[in-house]
Amino acid sequence: MTRVKRNQAPAIEVRLLREGIAESIHHAQAVLCDERGRVLSVAGNSETSTFIRSALKPFQALAVTTTGTLERYNLNDRDLAIICSSHQGHLEQVRQVFKILWRCDVDPSALQCPIPPGKQSALEYNCSGKHAGMLAVCRQRNWSIDSYLQYNHPVQRLVLSKVAELMRMPPEELILAHDDCGAPTYFLQLAQIATLFAQLASGDNLAMERIVRAMTHHPTLVAGEGVFDTELMRLTQGELVSKAGSEGVQCIGRVGEGLGMTIKVMDGAKRAKYAVAIQLLKQMGWISPAVAESLAETFMQLGEFKRLEVIGELSMSF
Image (cartoon, rainbow, N blue to C red; front, side, top):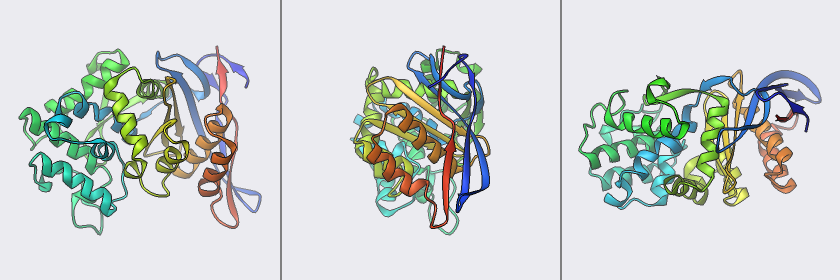
């Protein structure tokens, strides 16, 4: 591993090879931080900013774990896992979302996330668990459920305050925009996102520790069979917590060690972020050769004639 100035190093290149010949090229940046926000390793620029997208969900779940909502409605780790999920709309997952709403006496029609094309209900939308969690908090606090996605709604202000507290910055300094599901997401530097995941995985906060436990114990609810987050958490058996975001965002925390990594593929390609994650996890020794091989078979070998090749690595900062 080379040593570079703290915030910047050569970026990572991902090539799609067709029978060994490069057909497409993606560029990615990545950063590794500890729970104090120190940049330990970087590829690209750690100060590059992007929307965190669905990788925010474990931190949005703090509104549930810190308000007594779990206890009030007798919600368990399976419920918490689906609240953190970007699920596939499978029956097991949809039923888990419905269970949350049923327990807090909220009709599914209150969900303001979209109905997926060709589907019948917003329950089947990949973010419905997060929305159900927000509605549960609203019901527990006697807040309006009609406007729960607005920036100034108490549940969104609560989420914002939790994230700002973790980042040690005033809430008004965070830049917000609506995600595709209608809920707010945040525009953050890669190092800030990595630090959040380092804190999530550190084990120093009981509310976040429970979120990690729910995600790692029920990985199939967090994404789905054959999806990267699920497969990585299943194969590493609680050692890593993983959450993807759209537009090339991938975040991973090393459980119990207070280390977090964020990857951003600059053109938003999903296939490239998984390849980069496998490469960097191998580099850092966070996964075994057997796990790396299993993941690569699924996420880097794209067919009989195509595969992904990753060029570059994290460089140690100083």
